[in-house]
Image (tube, rainbow, N blue to C red; front, top):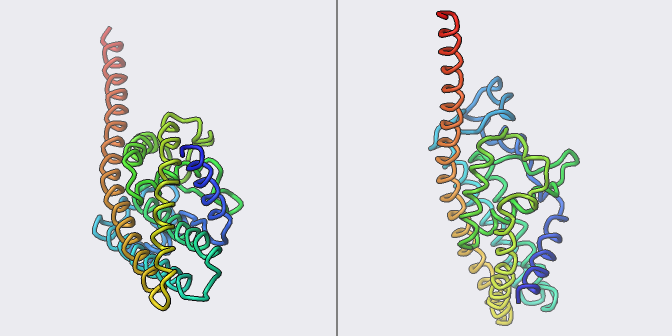
Amino acid sequence: MSEKGIALWNNVLSTTLRIPHVAVDRTDFLKKELAAYVNDEKLAQIQSLRPWNLVSDDVLEKIAVSCINSTTFMASGASFVAGLPGGFAMAATIPADMVQYYYHTVVLAQKISYLYGFPNLVDENGDISDSAVDLLTVYLGVTMGAGAASQGLEMVAKQLAKTAPSKIAAKALTKTFYYPIIKKLAPWFGVKMTKQTFAKGVGKAIPLLGGLISGGLTFASFKIGGNRLLKEMKIRKALFEQESMNENHGDKQIVDAEVINESNAKEL
């Protein structure tokens, strides 16, 4: 099941990432969402700042909840149409519905992660970069309730707290310390998607009610997943801040030590 799960996940993810407009640019998104709360001068600094340096926690949560709600309705609407009798052939409906579900999940995951200090996942060509795919897998694992994903997100947050918020490290994330967690998540996705496909397939097999059942299942699961990711990101924000404080404290100690040494040298 492990190899099949990995193959299924890679296939769905690669298909999802080829859909137009799946990539959300960090700078463009944050400028649009924060424009009502921040002046143009501060918005111009968004590449080098994390959003909580510009707005309150309440504003961040307000924007995140709005993103969750709007994306949930879009995903549910698409699922409803896919579940209507005659909307698609049964054989084609299930994978198409699955891909559109993950499309909306990927879009939402990018938006919430940007609000809570995570880096840009889009390359210079406007596509999700190769080095960001594994990070997206961690995000999606959180939304789907995988236990290993939370651990992975914590490890990523600790590392990224020490880097610029505008971009991830140039080296591929598959070579980083948390890659074993990615390997655990892929087969788990395979199992999760099989169950989801079965549940929605049963709904679509019921005339007239198929759209309602499919849309309702999507609405419930998507809403829960979005709120789960938001909760995790709020926790990681605190970790970001703590790590940054530790870094600044360490820099201050180095500066203080240099001042003391310089003073002692003058006395000698």
